[in-house]
Image (cartoon, rainbow, N blue to C red; front, side):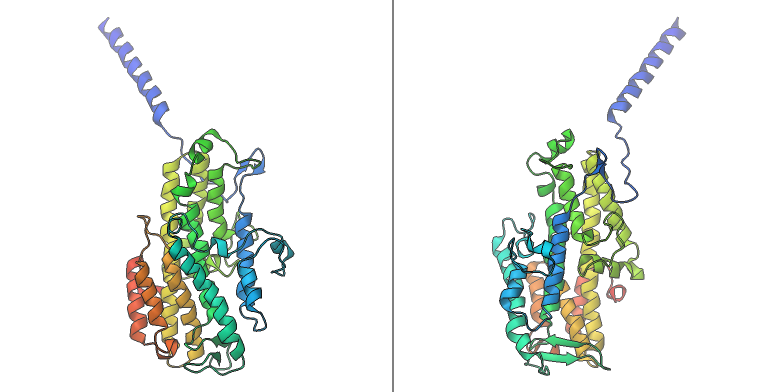
Length: 395
């Protein structure tokens, strides 16, 4: 009798343990082989707005190098309104989207900081205005310290068009936009919990409630929009090849091509896939872990290219000023883009004042014409240390 009672208790304990395990075990979340998510046999992925803005930015950056373009035309491309004939691509002209409205416009950094947001937008306006008023009129003038104009790379290389301090405004605009648009919207907006979990987003995602007239939940869509700022120009966005645009996509490929950072592109892509799968599975802890991975890796991409270009400019500063000025102009833009990176605590890696100090130092006095290698080395060392790599690795 004692043996029977013991057996019954043991069986009951096993059954209770089994039931308890069933209640608490969370099924594993597996990412798909590619960024493909369907509902009811149709895709639930959408980031067309990001593709549109990338295309608009591409046309605008190219237009900044056409000396016959007017300020009104360039401003129109930046602040586009639906129906205006601002672009060669007719589909862009019908769009209600534009680049300027999403520049420095994230929930984390600028929703309650409109003063800085407006100042950053004004800086981009200034790049356009100064290109038209300073550089275009001197298109045929040989640039020297204090005078804007053209300067040719050694050995009959490319001709660069710079301001009086050696800065290419078009490069400053393009590389700054990587941070102010692509990175800011991705890291500080669409991957922000303020946006992902806004209002009823979590409850709606849990219930499978779709956005009105759409095949996705709002949370799924926000995640896809973050994805779109990196992969929106790809021929096949589900299986990105990289090098598809002139912005973050291109420079992720560049950094991944550096043996010191090989694998960073795969790390970002896998995190995006797993994070999206976690949203479908309603596993928000796993989702948030992928956000940390993406923010850290994308931020490092910006910092690596900033240091890379500062050091590339230093290498030819004494022997080929046109080549140096081009690299330093790109570096200037990437340094500006540091403002929009985010560390694992949700804050900027460097104080805004320090980043602005870097930009001021690069253009102090006669700018690149009189820039010292020490300034470039000190800046590079500081950035590399904060973001967790070495100057030599970035070079």
